[in-house]
Image 1 (cartoon, rainbow, N blue to C red):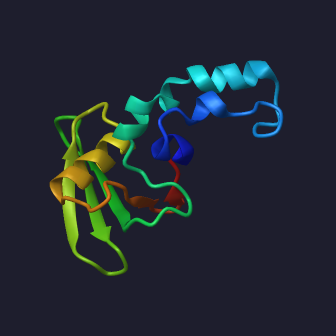
Image 2: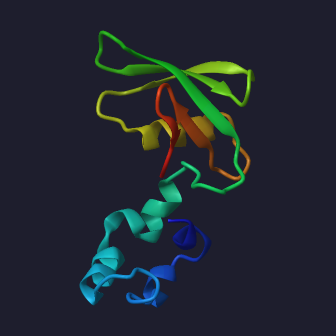
Length: 122
């Protein structure tokens, strides 16, 4: 994912034997994976391991009567707290994208931490 973020055509140059330690079919499968298409990668605001980005802790999730979910969030270690509401059916990716947009997060990526699960991977 990080390679595709840095260079949209990275998968085209992947060596299936040396890089993936798999078969050419695995390589072709990765190239056709919709999650790794440049447009999908551009929408993904969850930072990968080793990426410099702020940490956002999700401290609680609450179901609301209209089927939406309210998330209580904290920036960094004891930083500012806020809440965001996601409509029914939205994903953690949607929540993260809304967070990045609403708070104009520099770099457009955040490390997301969930209660009891630690860091969330893209």
